[in-house]
Length: 230
Length: 407
Image (cartoon, rainbow over all chains, first blue to last red; front, side):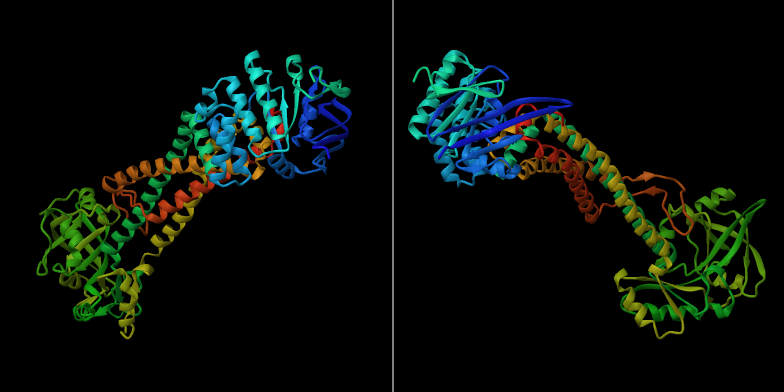
């Protein structure tokens, strides 16, 4: 069974009298353990598709499935429940809570999932070691470099052992070296934990890490195949 | 919850100056309310205490058909053999003192200057006269044997421009319905700092007052002070078999008590107005916080935080602002109320008919006012935070993650 599947989804944004068709009928499925890149130019619908797969948004039409469950019509709180237990996010702008330390940022999903303090301590320690940030655990985001912040975001995305991690341009705000490090960590975690990664990018250096590359253009899937590297 | 509290606390710390000013606004509002509440309470207490001490006592024994408003001197309207009645009342264990007083209407004049007065015949040796004895500003207190002397208040002396030793003419109504007049020497001038009382009250020794008004061995009332105000009911019961009417301090000070009730209700309205205004500052602070943290709200929502938790986070922030504001308010308000209690505010002669006010306003802060004002401040702040909290909780994560739209 696919971790996530979208069937003929469309998403139309309406601002005033102007309608923008971000997705025009996309159908695809992501298998467990995949490391998939969504590529395409700006405005092609990558981010919109990730948001629908991540239950952050609802399609105008069509269906979205997470682990076989139709999430297209869930209400706000049901979608929050689905995200909390099943999906991790990594964003282009790092998306950490500035008032919390790296450790506390990673801890947030665990708190929301009701883990005990001992469980949280163990899991955060494990993750902070996995992203090689033990020394910076008690620093706030403004005391961390962009690469370090993105590594915290990766650890947070993994905290609740989700079945799916969605990353929107995870290296877009990083220099080459940090971008490479982030992608290597994501690849390693995919291999070690088997968690499914879907990431949007338009950086050719990044999508070479993917098992599969899905190309979007003007809200449609125009290519769905193996990565050039694989 | 701990993390929500931590986040809320740190969020307030992000813009310390704004948070401080918000707390200060609430604190100032609360402090002013506490000052007003303390002055209301102090004034009501003082007015009641003054009325009891100077005018009504805790209880009065009167003839069954005595009408206070007519100041009748007809013997059937008076208490006969008042010293005996007073000593019987004074023998009750709850009674501190009981003394006869005779009331008459009169006109005091010196040359062309005249003034309507209330003449009170008193037993000069009674400790009930302590406020006037202690308030003596010149001359000496009248004695029981004095047949020529009287005592008058400072404002009246000022108005008639008389001094101790001056001769004044006193015209009084009598038991027969006629009037009589006599020249008296001003023995002393008192000042109880209650202008409404001092400017119209003249004291004569009881025997002399009875003589001039032809109400021999009669008094208008027996003035009674109790050891404790709460013993009023017990003493009323003990006197219930007497042929006299027994009037309580509550009945005689109805206006003060009703004014106090009205003041309490008015105070609540004032709470809502003042704190409502300060609440707008809190709303502004929190709405700005929501706008500034739109993306963070999106992040928290993305990692699975439900709307109610997001609302809770803002409620915690507003609670912290409220607690900070209340602490500031209690400190400032406590200082203001302390000043009002110890120094007071001079208001001069601002008497109200039916109520006795001193010439200074004094505060008296009671726990009920502190608790109710603080509670109202807290609740209003929480209610004020409802709008920004809902604003945050209703944000769609996608929009919030992109910095919001359109709120």
